[in-house]
Length: 120
Length: 195
Image (cartoon, rainbow over all chains, first blue to last red; front, side):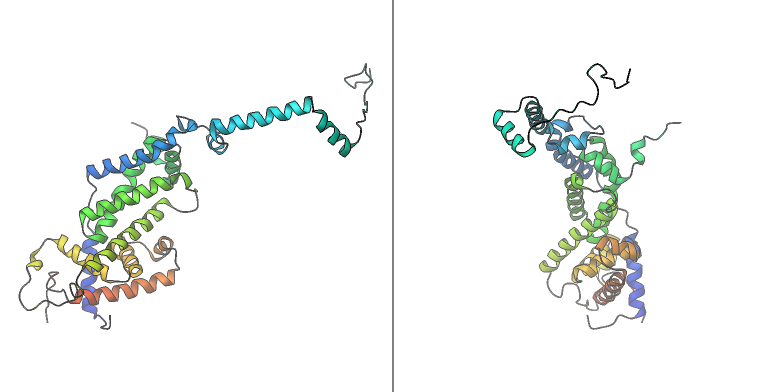
């Protein structure tokens, strides 16, 4: 654009801007229907996930982060394994822990007949 | 007197999170709140109802898809939607420009009275939109947000993710360019020449 518009042209443009800016075209009911159908189509896959089925509680995001039922199942299996190892470590594992931590020493803080440590 | 339902007063971002969590009612509330403005913005910029409907639907679809990743507090939903809608419109204007003959807009009419001068104001809106298509996209976007949507320069800066000075420069250059383009269409736009 090499020609500089004069004040009149700018004024006319401002009038055209004002006219078009006053257009308040409203969306049709059909457009609203299509937009809501789009929303439902996006929501549908999310609703198919276990947690999204009506769950909206405080822990919902955490549940989703853990991977829903599948993730929780894996976590439960790992936790159960850990508990079992604590109760009954396999011999091989016991050898390793002994090598690292040495033999276990039992330190009795309270006498056997004063389990509450009340001194009575 | 009926009390307003709490969700009808919820911020857009909160409704978007509710939508992502499977709340179908949130979608309707968001659509009722945001679709009219989005459609009107597209209509003003494109001057064409069918194209504006396509753009508005596309913009809303992008909103639904991003809902699951929305981070509250990072951006206003309305600002994000202004940006997406303006970008979609400038994409359309760019395609329109490619399909228009080079002199379709700027060519001055001959002395005969133009039929277009008698046309409905929608024709003038289309003429403005065609002229916007001749501008560089960023200028067209800034001019439309400033003069058609009535946003302030800081608001435009947020929408376009640029500085306020850059906004001022874009709108000033865009407006000058637009005035020069439209100068060739005075009669077509129904503007009387009183010289």
